[in-house]
Image 1 (cartoon, rainbow over the protein chains, first blue to last red):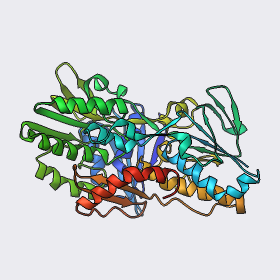
Image 2 (image 1 turned 180 degrees about the vertical axis):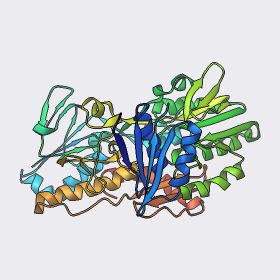
Image 3 (image 1 turned 30 degrees about the vertical axis):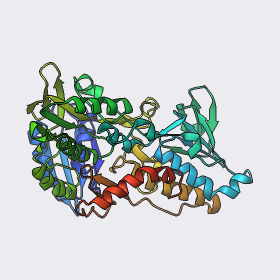
Image 4 (image 1 turned 30 degrees about the horizontal axis):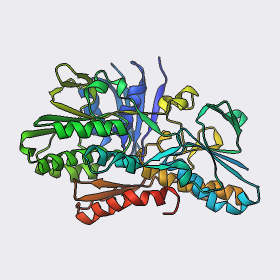
Length: 76
Length: 377
């Protein structure tokens, strides 16, 4: 079991949280879990939409304070 | 104090020149030495490559001799670093010379890696190199009509380039009188047409007006060169006649080879711009792993912070500034109009309608860059 890789994309507008997640997803191994931290409200819907379309696995999504914690497992 | 700058691109050159001015007295007195190691004796103005690809600038206009851009007090060597020995505060170069330092600045930049996508090298045009931009111009000039696909890798240098290239394609074929015979389709990795929400909101009606088609959530998986088809990780595909790519990038190989950061991006403090674990090592420009645009503009503003802090450490023993994430990007909206995006960690850009005066400001900046990189602007 791999450790969870945390990606801090809080307070960033470019390239933005989903671009950051895609960047790190490319570097990850199948089965790895990535946790994206985002202050962008749009991430709560943008990330699951991409994850579903590309075929990875959503582990969970919750807002703690002002920060979204979105966990995704690389599936392919 | 020995200050060593590794990398002679935008960030490295601005930080070195800025330091040379701030520490001129200390340099003259021999209390400070300032050395730059670079892989090249030439300096390229990389944003100019877009103009080369559309026949608006000649390649030789993109270059200056690196030595001519540097303050005389900077000791300059064309001798790229091969080994970083951070715990010993030394680097070893390609010519096997060893340089010690008290403060190190790493600004080695990034490189495109089209070879990571099957078929992309042989199947696409790209303007991210001089040879590529010239080849792309010839392909565009010879194109008589059909389907053009533009694809975008992640991460990539200059996040504005995909929309700029698309607007330029429209204007290029309109000027040739064959725009109605060219279908332009833009493909973007996330679920809007640009990573910056306000840029996406501004560009979408422009794309609609120009009749540019677009597909979002398209991450390129492979190029079927024989059949001229691109396929995405999201299981969609598109048949093209001419493919233009903005390939994904990685940090420089030397960073990966020295295990300084995954994919060549060095873990960096987003405000102090120091390397994780090393208070005397600064990182700037494309080399950082920060969630900040990989642009000359970011490198410029980061370089000013790093230089001011190194100089203040020399003078009073403490840094005085923090990087706030500032980026300023011109956005060419075709061949005669432009706008800009300015933002930082806290404030998103507020896009203004494109106009001719901003385009001419950008054209002027293409020359002003040489003053900027000398640290004069």
